[in-house]
Amino acid sequence: MSLNPEQLKKHCEVILQSRRIKNKIVVLCEGVTPKIQGRESPQSYKAMEQMPDANFYKACVPTWWRQKLPEFFNCGDRKDVIDTYFTLLTLHKQDSTNSYLDCDRLFAIIDLDLQLQTIDNYIFTDTEAIFRNLYEKSEVKEKNAAQHRIWITGLIHKEAYFLTPELQSLFDDYPNSPIYQENLVSLTNIYSDMADGISSDRDLQFNLKRAFDRINHCSGLDCTLDLDKFQDSWKHQFQNTTDATQKHELIVALLTIKKAKDYWHLIKPAGDFSRDERVFREQLSLEIGRFYSQQSSDVKCHIPFFFKALHECV
Image (cartoon, rainbow, N blue to C red; front, side, top):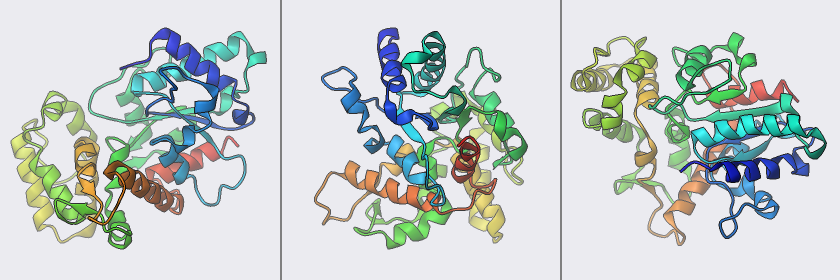
């Protein structure tokens, strides 16, 4: 549920009046907004970076970035994030004396998702237009990055970055042995399960052309707007290729169009973990964030590259 106008204004006022954003980059992201008894409060915003979404991106800040670290704020759903971005700019313009915001250092990052989200009064009309300008063949277009203030994930949503192939060793070595479907986490098995769910995915069916337009550069895939044929072609290629580069391309294509949240939520701790499963996944996501914080800012590495682009504004 999106913020109503009154909630949105209050949410933005709290951010603008937060002293911790002074001379800092501000990053708006999706996630539950802090509330105390149904109302936002300055005190609750102090704990913002301990909340899911914001704390994941905070964990991703590169290890080489040591001063003037970005400040992260959960803002609700995709529409809320976009509305917050523009409302912050408007309120700051109306009364800059009551704001610590540097408008040139304001950014947002939202999920690509399958559905289109329109954006008014921006250089790009919708989320897919941002995606097409920012990415090509699953890589960031470095020459275009500087013009983007509202960033889109290159994979379908944040949780897809929790399941990328290079994380297998992290799952293998993680304490309390992460379990998926009663076995130790095997990302290959998760990809196979995701592929098995393609033909019955109604969201994918309703947004098929948009989804296939994102990945039609992948050789060997049947992108003729038939989910069954696409599913069969993906599984055939994945099971039979011996080329590591092609297999990685297939996985990235899958994570660009097939929602990963449900599969991520099936990852659980071993039986000796005493706390809630949600807490386990939050802790695991922070470890994944720290993994990304140590990666190079190559155009193939979406999250590290995002922070490289942010750092240009320090």
